[in-house]
Image (cartoon, one colour):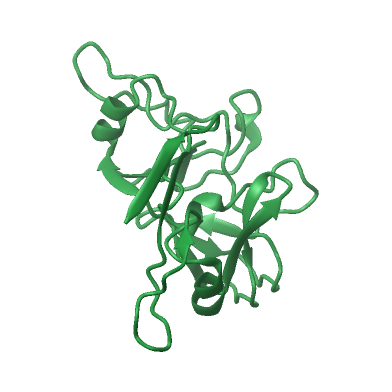
Length: 202
């Protein structure tokens, strides 16, 4: 059973559900969660991850050491094409959307139980560099280097981005200029940033 509540100020929709993991007795866990698909006990035990408070509100943390270039978690949510995303958010007001730059895939994680990937933050504004990145085609969160247990998982995204511009009068999806696609940072300082394979709309 899924229980839903209205949106908060961030555009997120709170939804709780029964934990999807199984107990040692081969029965579905009876605990409920609104932070991904597993209760915090099973998330820690099975995935080595925790969602808890960070400097940015809630953040995704690892409870075990992670080797370089390892997939940490997929970015889960409602999957759609870029045209579908443009129709769904004609005002460019999505807050938990990722889109691939080489495929037609977009993932909307506005529901709080979409998956724990939605809780990963950017290290922007801190003295630390991002320790992870998004793989383009599958939109997985993948480690850049060794990450020690207890560390917050961070990857680069920019609040100055829009994944999709409103549709043109001909009905076609309008993408940002090539010089702006897949870059990290705000529109005012994007020129010196590094190109990536995805675009974050957050």
